[in-house]
Length: 295
Image (cartoon, rainbow, N blue to C red; front, top):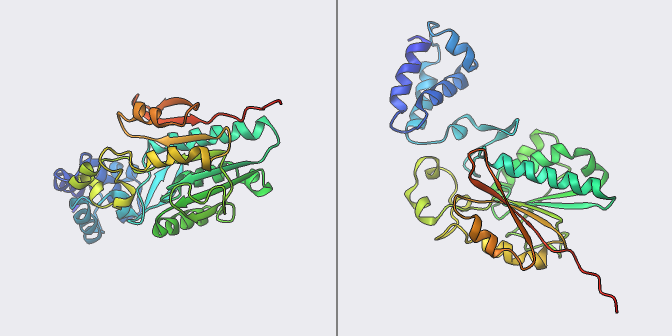
């Protein structure tokens, strides 16, 4: 069978399981052959010498298994993130969360000489923490910035540790098995900047298990009846657990912006950052600074 014939057959085979069958076929064929997609498209007449391997990955994709799990990685934010069933697959929209965090940390580092503490809650694969660590490698090494990546799942933390090690920043990020911000102000410092991509899919949607939702860990997806079961306690804990004047950046689902804004602590400023599709995607909550009292 030629490359062109294999791609045509694979595309037909994947139509029932994927919204992008042709793309999936090209990506998976590139994966098993070690060729890039441009080469495959330029050489449709080339004989396929990896038919069995291609058939095996197509069978996995036909059952709905995500391409990122089949390949074992996801290209995200110009980084190669190791992926498997221990954690959620990094989404393109989460790049917006990482960019917002990087901008906030940079602003704080340049504002004065004070050290900055940042915390990536529900780090999952560690993608956001990794993007931050690579951008601020020197600040972390010098102690100007401390960065904690936490998750309630030990399996996810193990994957995060592997991704940090793959990119040579494992010694610059603290890993903590923690429920939201529970150790903050105790065994860990109160954060000046918090990022969180908490589960925000409703339980009903998770139960339906469409597409990749049937393969990704439920703990990373299920946000309860309205998708806000974890966002509520996180926001409620901010006055006690976060530093005064802290900025909290939260990825949210469609239609959740107004409700999340109402849950913000009293006196906090709230802004919404839309994604490229114009959907509300990141909520920025900034807590009040302490007000000096003169007796």
